Each structure stands twice: as structure tokens, then as C-alpha cells.
Length: 327
View 1 (cartoon, one colour):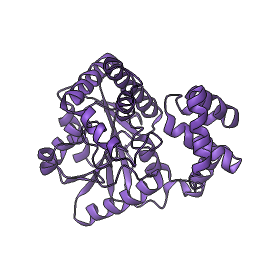
View 2 (cartoon, one colour):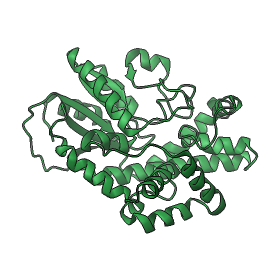
View 3 (cartoon, helix red, strand yellow):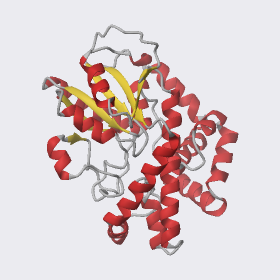
């Protein structure tokens, strides 16, 4: 366990919410379920893919037996044809947090979508609405020249955002470039102004306690990712994506279908690659996602880290939460 605040304890004046973060395949759900069984906690999902209905296998969504033990809010409620924003998540999560607190329990926010956690922590600037024409132009550029070309164009308009957003993160790349072009301002400046306007979270009604979990060795996480992706394929991931594709109202421009695994399987079904290549690319894409998540976590302040492979981790997390200390 590592405390990035050097053990500094902060006096709490608001109700607490616990945020359990970590890269994909790190064991967040198993730990959260164990905690819910021992403490008056209630889980709120913070995974931008698990919000969608009909996307169960490829998102690693908890099975019905697990959900019977530990219900998750903000899970499995949105159609894959719909778009969902960090601003909407912040509003929805706050409502759920207030409802959980009113019932005498503590919210436990669990997931790996770091943008959603940052929206809770820092607030959000008011962003322009999506521009379908501009998005289509960016998609066309990516199709012609690759997402590296999109990343290079973003770097010219907003070097700070380009440094923060990985070239293999098309959804965030597209949105960042879209905002830069449509507003004439760097996305970074808009976000920074939003955090200033938010008053550094003084008005947010909860104190957020951040915990992170991941293996101490990157090779362990890579092995777990490969094993899990193979398991998803064996469990019917290709059939799941085929059913979504057959609906006729979905395509790879949607955030839901750009989720790791779904995009690669969709391309396989379109005949763009062989089965073995699809599996390999799915694993690589998942590892790249995990790398981005870890990068976010390393920059996170006031967070206590736990080793997912340490058998004492559940007890240590439990002890920290029970101590009611905010770090």
C-alpha cells in the first residue's frame, strides 16, 4: 500500500464517497463486491462501456449472480446507439450518490474511466455540442491517413492535450480536435477555465476518497488481459458483436462500438482481418487502454495505491475505509 499524501489526514466536513480506480482486468469488481459484503457501501459503475445494454461479454460486465450480491447503479441502462458524456455522468452519479447517502450508506464508485473520475473531482467546463459534419471530416482524415495524423493536427492546435491523449485513443482525439476547430480555442484552455469556474470543487457535496488497485508488475497485468480476452471470445464475444452489427443502426463512429474489443471484432466481421489477427489486436488494444489508465493514475493526487495480487489487499482496503480517514 502506498499513500501519495505521506499519511496526511484531512478533516472531513462533508459525507464521503469512496472511489476505487484501476486499469482494466486489475480486479476492481471482485474487490468492490468483497467490500460491499462487509461494509454499508453501494456500488456506482464508472465504466463508460458497461453503461450500454446488449454489451455484456466484451465489457466484462458483472454477471447476474454477482449483481444479486452487489447491485451496481449506472450499469446497463443506455442503448448503444446513444452517446453519453462526462458531464451527464457527473450529474447522474451525483444523484445516485445523494440517494445512497440518504439511505444511510456510502457510495462506492468503481471503474476505469478516468475522465469520469476527473469530472467528479475537478468539475467540468461547458463544452460545445457535437458537430456531426466536423466529426465526419475528422473520421475521414483518420480513414485516409490514420489516427496518428489526427493526433499530429491536434498537437499543432493544442500541444498540451495532444501530450495527454494517446494516438490510439480515437474517441478522445476526435472530441479534442472537434472542440479546437469549432471553438477556435485549445481544449486545454476551456477545461482549465472550467476548473477555475468550478471553485476547486468547494461546492461539491461529497469528499472523495481515491483508492487505486493494480498488479505491481506490468507483465502480470498483460497476462491477465490476454487471458480475459481469450475468455471473452470463448464466451461468445464475436456473436455478441455480430448481433449488434445486425441491428443496422450502429457503426464504428459511435463511442459504444469504438470500445476496446468491439471495434476489433467489428472489423473482423467486416473482413478486414483474420480471426487470429483480431484476437491479437484486441489484446494489444486492451493493453494500450490499461497503459493509458495507469498513466492517468500516476498523475492522480491524494490517492492510496494497493497491489491487486497481494492477498492482504482486501483487508487493508477495508481497514482504511473503516478508519474514516480521508487521504
